[in-house]
Length: 167
Image (cartoon, rainbow, N blue to C red):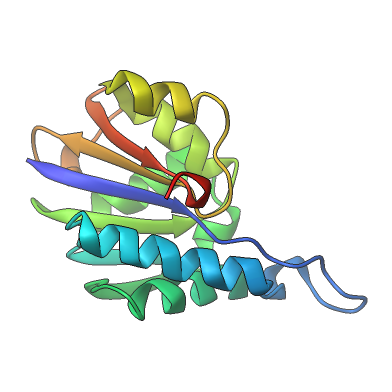
């Protein structure tokens, strides 16, 4: 059994003149939400072996907030998590995931699209919550029968969906 944690980065401020979207930092509520989600992951024992993190500033700052509260395992940064679609995310997961657990800190709509695509079944409450959108700092927890190297559309089970508003 393996687990995939899909986390949308925390809330960022609007881009200031002359600042690229890639370089937008978290706002104060985003920093607090990242720390809250890290604590929630620790309490629930959602501890990844490996974390794949977008190189965008808001994703890296989300990782910092999590890491202050819980173990994030070995961390790998990818510029492509900013620009790839859900299929690209899945390829990165397959290439970097083993039999344990993996956290992806990415962006929407890719995070939401991937969570919906791989979750063939799941807890009714979690599926219902995720169907209402994937807010910043939202976390989908998807369980797979085998290693993440063979993760595919529809073969995961959505165990939980957490948002800062629900913690």
